[in-house]
Length: 137
Image 1 (cartoon, rainbow, N blue to C red):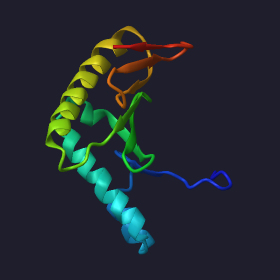
Image 2: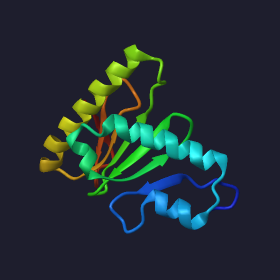
Image 3: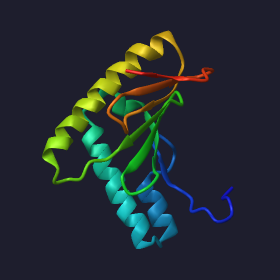
Image 4: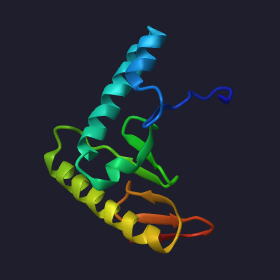
């Protein structure tokens, strides 16, 4: 249910019965904004497609211009910012962050249930389910 006065986030589900293209064909109308967001999310997913964690993506939300939330099949959220296409230096750093986040996820999820991993800052933040505080890596 949409809250009054708030714009709903664009979300895409993977592994369901309908693909994004099938939904587009059924709706037969999409605003330019939605088409632009689909393009951005597709490009973002292409950047992650070589990672093992890619197969665990269940949903992805675009929160604002650069911020994305990825939800994995076990409910773990990964909060991240997307780097501009022409910023090669930071793009390389971002790719390393995703590799490290993947390693953290696969290693730490064996020990405890993770609520989210936040990659938006210089440090990696992991919040575990049931904890009132978070851990910085």
